[in-house]
Image (tube, rainbow, N blue to C red; front, side, top):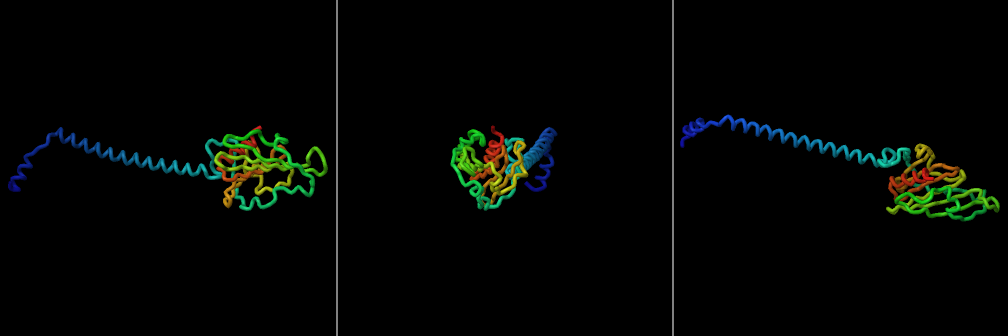
Length: 225
């Protein structure tokens, strides 16, 4: 067939109006579908980005905490030197030359009974100091150790004197209205907290422990009867 005859044959072909309208609608719907797919995909990416940003910020010490953390606890962590435990925690020998080792149970009013969920203990003891032979000590220095199920430890030093060495000030944070000093040492990956309650000074040291567990047991020690 010659090109002239082929062109003449094409010109004689007509498309019914119904088919033209159906084809037009089909093209419009396909275009809308593609736009919707792109729009939905964009929303998904933005939502994932926001969720990631929030998830990261929740675990930054001193800024956000676990969503389940008590509302009456506000901790603002400060940096603690890696040699925080380099000094003697307490110096009592000069004033109180006599001493006696006693059980934690002998001073059960100092620490709450038992341990929070996920911890065992406490294990430890108390050294009672005397200026002269007596049934009542002039000062005490105790240590209690709690073990977490994840393998971390939380040690608590406590005394009824003002001679306990503290690696941080008791200020900047609060738990249930009690002033607290909270700190973290990047050098040895340890958490610290210090507070005063019932005429005793407490120093907490968390090793190989998560921030959530550290804050949970800190809250337990302050709030539990």
